[in-house]
Picture 1: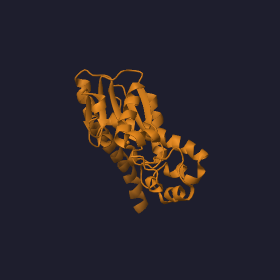
Picture 2 (picture 1 turned 45 degrees about the vertical axis):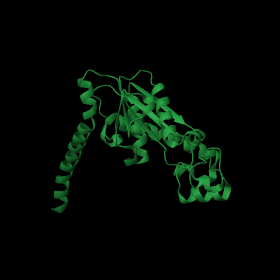
Picture 3 (picture 1 turned 90 degrees about the vertical axis):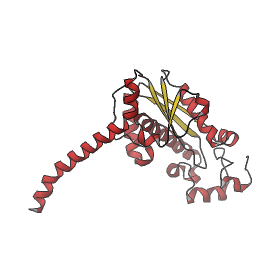
Picture 4 (picture 1 turned 180 degrees about the horizontal axis):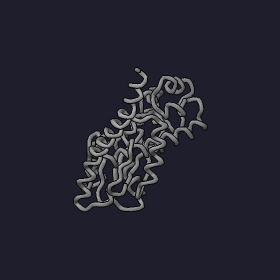
Amino acid sequence: MAGARKRKRAPKSAAGKKCAETWRLKRLLEMERTLWAEGLRFIAGVDEAGRGPLAGPVVAAAVILPPGIAIRGVDDSKRLLPVRREALFIEIRKHAIAVGVGAASSREVDRLNILRASHLAMQRALRRLAIPPERVIVDGLPVPVLGDDHMAIVDGDAKVHCIACASIIAKVMRDRLMHRLAGRYPDYGWQTNVGYATADHVAAIFARGLTPHHRRSFEPNAQLGFDLR
């Protein structure tokens, strides 16, 4: 009897999840719908990945999707498991009008500081779009180098569909790069920590020193005496 009740509730639960996702996507698209109603078509969401790691570049992505497109499951990349991000990466690339990816190297991070390097990566991502955007929406605070014709939304990767898509593209591209670099520098665990300050990564830095891809101005890298700030 209990088993029968469980089988009866399952379809309702699935329907409830589908309904919840529909409403979540509706909220996620509110900003784009407002801009589409104003006659804008090419709206670029922009976000970056990799501001905090000890090694590797900071990577930014810009994504323009057709009006009315909503990709189920899209969310802030930090909330998604890697396998889900990879699947959504494919879906976003399939539906997007244009995708641009830009990066700033670890050396540029050291020379400029991480904030300015992140802004540089965003500029590069926007320049690589095949279609010039009519409006740019950026995650976080305003980005002066992008000029006055952009909007900045704090926590935009969790609030705006096109920014969430950009966060997924940036995260997947950066992780893939770090996985490739892990083949050249296998002692630092980049295949799993993707450059972040995990215990194994920090231990490897003190045991083996820095690679050319480490941000020498970042702690604990700077503790080795290479602080360039």
